[in-house]
Amino acid sequence: MYLGDYIVIEEQTGPFAFACECVSTGTKFAASIDEDKREIFCDRSFPDSHPHACRFLRPDGPLLRCTIHRDSPAQCKFYRCVVMRIADKEGKTLGIVTGTLHLHSDDPGLRSVWEAAEKAVPESFPDAEEQRQQYLAGRGYLVT
Image 1 (spheres, rainbow, N blue to C red):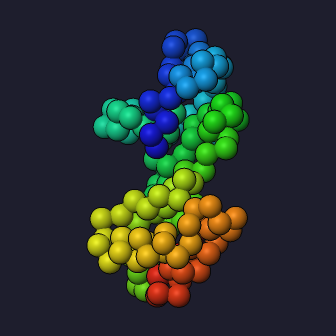
Image 2 (cartoon, one colour):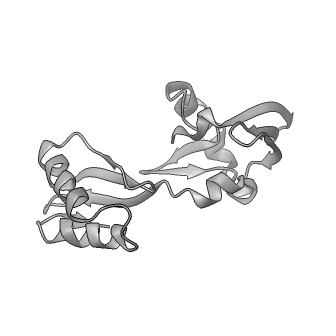
Image 3 (tube, rainbow, N blue to C red):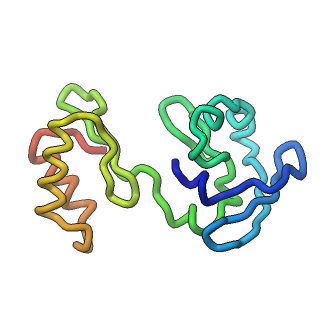
């Protein structure tokens, strides 16, 4: 969600076409809004209310979607936004974990368990993501 600081729209070149630049690499690229996402792209309320979010990110029901998936730059293709959704036993979402294995949650219980998981399974472990999922599941959380 915070790639908006790294991907800049330099110019709109058509109704759904843009000249862009990856700030971190200086790489320029052309992006066209995927045809199946043009309707959600037209709603500007999300980028207006989230100034650091990627300008091409839009809500689609409960999910956030990249509207330039086909043309997204390499840094986006290697970045996974959400790798885990964590819920309580009743299915209420308590937090998400991003591709960098960072927890985003306001739930103090989950935050405490996550900190213990980080100590038990450091990020450097080859299968840290899977082991942390198992750690959370073993403590009663639903992990998808």
